[in-house]
Length: 425
Image (cartoon, helix red, strand yellow):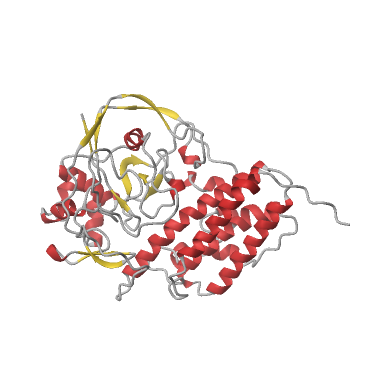
């Protein structure tokens, strides 16, 4: 007679595992509208194929959880470590980032089988462990948050792909807009006093290592706009020669404008009264009151300078965001940022577009990367990039918190990023 099973009431089984399954299922829901052909193509060096995202997040669980903690685990395919490792030097050689679209093999079906193999093994691991193991719990939670990040990247990369397609396909059909010509909400300002203030994650709930350690920073008196900069305001910048006047731009930004022939935000098409915007809903009329999106740090900084203001620091943004609720608790992403219809308080801090700050992405005082391969996740990128705060309309809700530090290179535009103005008092 078999011995009775030991009841497993661990945090892993009761809390983390349901979240893990929901996250894994959500990734598959996101790709249901796609064809196999959609999932293979790589439109730019920055944007990875959908198939690669699905396999990479699976490789993460196989490499860092199952191979180490599940006795007798069978690696699905030894070649996948080369194909789907992203940037982990500790895990060996890998397919160059800009050549991920050349991986026509393994097929989409093979990748789906890989996901099933790993998901079944994760279930066996949870059943096998009689209680909590802190390291397993930590890696599972990192893996959940990592896959959620790739869900946002997947949608960003799909927009880049469909925008490059001359047919301008829609990822999903959208609802007709009723406010395309609505006036923007009145711009108001909230004022904040100076002080030596604590910043960084407070230790309650999950956070990435780059949100630690909590530390003090001095903030001078400042004011922050109650809403984001809109498409209509950006058109004024264009019409005033914003992309033609070097006086608005940092030197590297101006060189980028000249080299790339920028004349408007990414995914804008047309000119004047006929501006259109490529979105995940397809090519749509530009909504004047909606937040401008898909602009680089260089563009955001130039607009702020042109307007007579500046970008906030990441500490100013975090101070203003404290006490404000994050966006929806369930992940039903909007496919493009929406216009405001209220202007009585600080709005659009989360769930519209990521917001560029003037802060360089650097370690907080006393920061130490985690040991092992996971230490490569954030720490080694802390140079030559800018911090963004908030969350976009396609960001999973668990990634909306005041201390969250997103980061991109200043010339990059394919992320759902816009800006909020600030000024000194």
